[in-house]
Image (cartoon, rainbow, N blue to C red):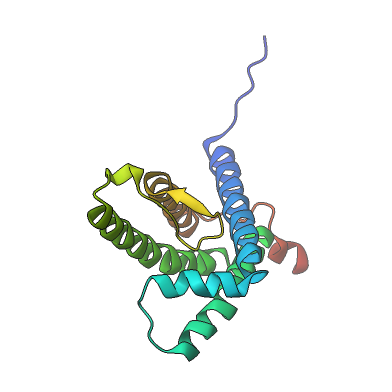
Length: 163
């Protein structure tokens, strides 16, 4: 009887590749959804009431989606994975705090149970339940942190170009 054994290194490499591809695909998809409707995205960014300058609001609404697409493409290609993981953490962590803060304000204003709070957070998925959105963001933060920690050169373009 033959037993198929997968080494721990191979399993970690596969998990890292799947995490990179999943995060990359999500960034590309969500970035394109926002980029193709910049006016709607601008309205959603404005609802957070964090930026007062119209110029800055327009700059955020016009560049952030394309920046997400770019980061997603880097992850899909396996290019600058650790740097892109840092950038994704720098986007996800404050965004999660901002979404939580807005959800708490809506909860207090409408006297709702926390998980009953639903709104369009601007992520590109439309109106979402806050508990689901926070769980999703925590998962994305964990995936980004894993990509930062794990060295994974499997299925990357950079090593194929320079061999």
